[in-house]
Structures are given as C-alpha cells and as structure tokens.
Image (tube, rainbow, N blue to C red):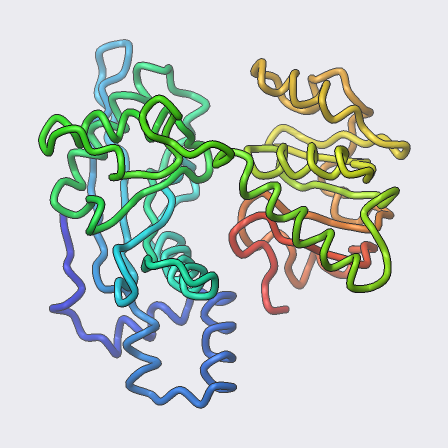
Amino acid sequence: MVADQAGMDRAQRASDHASTAGPAKQFNAACDLLEVGTRERTELSVPDREISKLIPVLCDDGTTRIVEAYRVQHNNSRGPYKGGVRFHPHVDLAETRTLASLMTWKTAVVDVPFGGAKGGIRIDPTGLSQAELEIMTRVFTNALDGFIGPDVDVPAPDVNTGPQVMAWMVDEYSKTHGFEPSVVTGKPLDMGGSIGRTAATGRGVVDVLERHLHHGGSSIVGKRVVVQGFGNVGSWLAREVARRGGRVIAVSDIEGAIHEPHGLDVESLVKAVSAGVSVVDSGVGRELDAATLLGLDCDVLAPAALGGGLNAETAPAVKASVVIEGANGPTTPE
C-alpha cells in the first residue's frame, strides 16, 4: 500500500505525530521559543508522504516470508528527501516517522541542501543469509521505484545496513533507470562512494566532544569513556577516542557489555567484532551486566545504539559529567 499523506486530514496527523513523545516534545518546545504559529507548526510536524509495503522475502529453504517495510518522506522544502534505511525488528511506522522528522531538522541545522526522510524493514537481519538479505533489499528498492532518486529521495545506511546494502540498492535502481550511483549515499568506493564516509559519524561525535572539552579547559586525554552500542558509529567513536588519548573503559552491543577500568584494547575489539563475534565473545575485557553500563563511573557516556536509551528510568543512574549522542534521539526530554 502506498499512502500519500496529501489527501489526509493534517490536523489529525499532527495529533498522531505528537504522540511520539521525545522528538515531538522537543519540536513543540522549539516552536514555543520561536513563536511559530499554529499553521506553520502543523505543516512542519507531519510528513509529506508515508509509504507502507508488505514485501515478500524468498528464503533459502524455498519458503516466502512477508515483512513490513516503510519509507517516510517528511519534508523536501530545502532539497531532495534524505535519510537512512534500517533493518531492525523494532522498525514501525511511528518510529520511521519520528526519525524522518529528525532528518529534516539535521539537514537544516548543518545547512546542506536536503530535506528529511527515513526508511526501514521490520526484521532481525542477523537471522538472514547473505542471499536472503540481498533479495529483501532488492525487493524493497523496487517497492520504492518512483519515490527515490537523486533529485527525489536519497537513502543512506543506518542500523544494520551499510555499503553492501547500498550497493544492492544502486544496482537494482540502475536496472530501470540506468547506472545512477547518486541514488544513495554510503555506497562502496568502487561505486562512487566517498572516502571517509564509513568513519564520518563516529569521528564527528569525537570532534564535537573534543571541542566541548577544550571549551571547558580540558582535553580528551585520559578521559574515561563508556560507549553504548558497537556498530558502525560506536566502533569508530571508540577508535577515535583511543587514538586521541582517551580511555574506552566499557562498550556494549546487542549481546551484552564488557568492561576494563584501565581501558579496553579497542583495535583488538574492532578486529574481533569485524570477524563476526559479539563484544562479549571478543576475548577483550570482562563481561558486564549490560543493564549497569549507563551507570558506570566514567567521565563521558556516549549512547550510540538505538533511540530512547537514556530516559526517566535510566538517567538517574548516570555518573558521567558529559553525555554525547551518537545515536538518533538516544535521550528523552525527561
């Protein structure tokens, strides 16, 4: 099903959108400060279009699995829609809608000529083979035909996606439209990708951290850093912290957490995780109850996993003097 939002009642959609608590509260607080009127606030708070699909995935055993897929195009006033594609079992329309709106604000704040969008498939990709992942990605790309393109909407990597998924998207899109690598970002270098793109987000987080510490008369050297999430962003964040003289004392992933008060061997950890093991099976550090990670005694806490991890229940335990966000919306207003 493709649902174009233009024909729906915008006031009702604004109410539905506001129910996604964190970013909606922040958006409304910003509008209050800027004295944004009701009409403009409503126009900015709801997406231009929402695309919902049920797509078939041909499994290796010959069966077919039906999965939910989404693309929300929030606003293109400043340029083509832009935003990541994630594969995760918690993906749904409400989350995708919220993340699309955050992309609108992010591209505007850093002044790049794009709007905001987000997409995803509700599935745990760790249970899929490479062949099943490829088939699913190609079917998803075909489902978005007519809604993505260099001047329309440019997808990118996000949770559980990366250069390989982007390469499949480019190839599938090009079957219909001719070779067009600019349909996505985050693709491999041999398909026109950008040098440094994979490391850019994690490095950018550490750049901001370093500037913040310098502003306060300090530096990253010797700082004890805890990283929640060890995917692309978290792993590069940890590498940059270690390279610049900080101590990464704990990290976590979906399987658990590890801790070493004197500092983890980050390069060995990255090598082990790249080989396909979890942080707890890497042989680096001592296993830690993941529920206690956010409350460790440290100088800097870097949530780089999923959204909402720091909330009214978990935040009181935090001992870090600095929290720096690597994920999308990891802290709630509370």
